[in-house]
Length: 285
Image 1: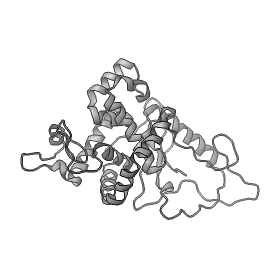
Image 2 (image 1 turned 180 degrees about the vertical axis):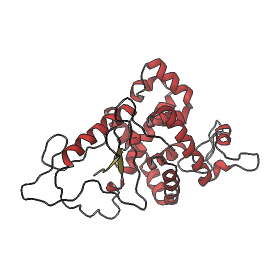
Image 3 (image 1 turned 45 degrees about the horizontal axis):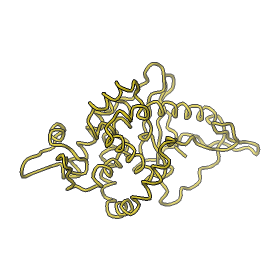
Image 4 (image 1 turned 30 degrees about the horizontal axis):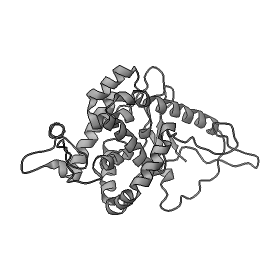
């Protein structure tokens, strides 16, 4: 299980889940006076939850990627809905952010029979050695890399391992593509652990892999999440959440509006962790 702790007194980590059978509320409903208002982080009199930012260099890439792959992505939405459900359940069980399911689309377009030139197979594109290390049977007559359920369990374990190693989801996505060694080499050459600073020291395909993942995430979610942020960006965002919560915690709020059917905006939870307080769950919008 991922172990989220604070290191060196800083806000280190989050965890958020897409809610399957539970709903959480963190801002208590209180008596509303006529002159009561809510302030957002910038001090404006409104309830504006801090948005997860998209890196400035990605704006055109995300837009172009959506245009180029719109037909494919819409087909996946209509024909692979059961895949989303299966992956979500497994990732939740293993405490992996469910948004990482979009990595499977980048890897294989959710094709269980997909095979790369290098010999990677299945939705999660495992090479034989890695597959066996994570409990999958791979023989000349039987290949569990093609089994969505079993291969997703293996992918969850591998993603957990990579996160324990890098503590940065963008570097996890990069190392899922290239293996940890090229990412470690890029960190050493660049002198930075930020994907945006070390990306040019990565293989081109790995660099693009991370950007494709972010773009795919934005296409399906319409926004970013913690897995589209690097570690430094995550820490900065969590501080914004803490500041926002500090400003709104003691203020009255309006009754929560009913969420429109099919809108998943309110399904994302963020866990804010610090040294002095217990975990506070903040509804994203």
